[in-house]
Image (cartoon, rainbow, N blue to C red; front, side):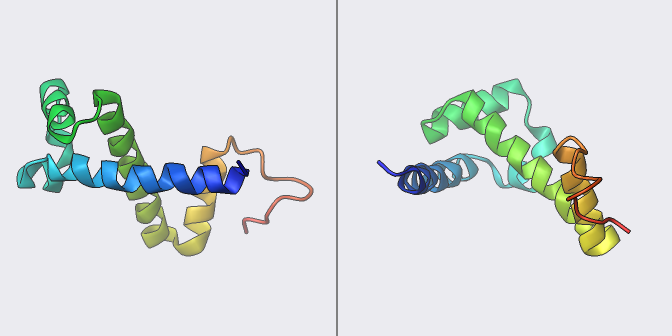
Length: 101
């Protein structure tokens, strides 16, 4: 099976899983994900038919996106690109890298 088809199939499975996880949260938990301790994460996982690791993965994605949106709001595109550079190990500078000035 071609690689791009594998990616599409895995992505099409992830969206309903994310929706199930979010749907298993209370409105208060959706507004403030910092409330989610271990027992709440386990309850959400049971309610959504997923594992606590899936819930943790979704929360980590949310936190990363929240961080990137904050950088975009503060520094525009330059701030976001600097954030991406930091996430990728900072090895993008030098010859062939993108200028960040």
